[in-house]
Length: 225
Image (cartoon, rainbow, N blue to C red; front, side, top):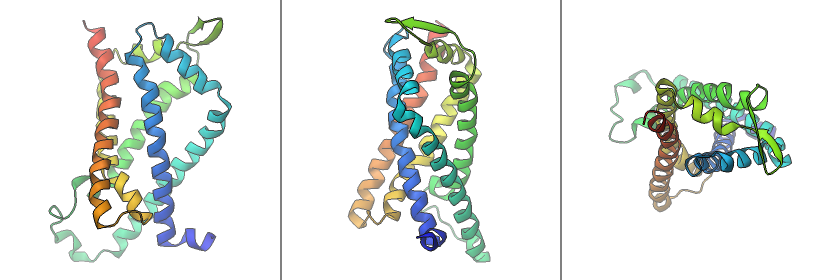
């Protein structure tokens, strides 16, 4: 098993599995965040955020997600470096625009930019909620972090909202290729299903990008009305 994972095919397979795992988490995370738009009191989002923060399953899932992300980055870096070494000198002169998308040719760069965006997100939200000192609120007799106040406050600054909107777009571009590519590596994409998964992947990428971008835009507009 260890020999297989050390092989080129094994690394691509493992990167696909971790990538699809993270793709699933993104959808769950987006659904939770969209609660910010449907309750101006913030109670709905605070209750949901508190449930996720105190849920035993999430305590187990957090390190798994972190490990999956780290391994995804490591394998992506290795595969990118191996591909660059194996390319002939004349490779750069070949016009690939007709045979591949811009996102597919720049997956590693997009991934790096998404990682920078993720670090910003962790510092400003996850870390502050998990370890920082933010205000508390009592809902139905339960004291919890006022996560809604933190999110709405930060998104009131145009530059912070701009960073998140750009980050959402970069994430969408990364997913537009990564979604169907993951299934292809797993051997679940023949000629017919490749076209279908390509369409589904692009649709999913648009949903994720639009969903995450609309949240900071909503609070930015709200704070300036």
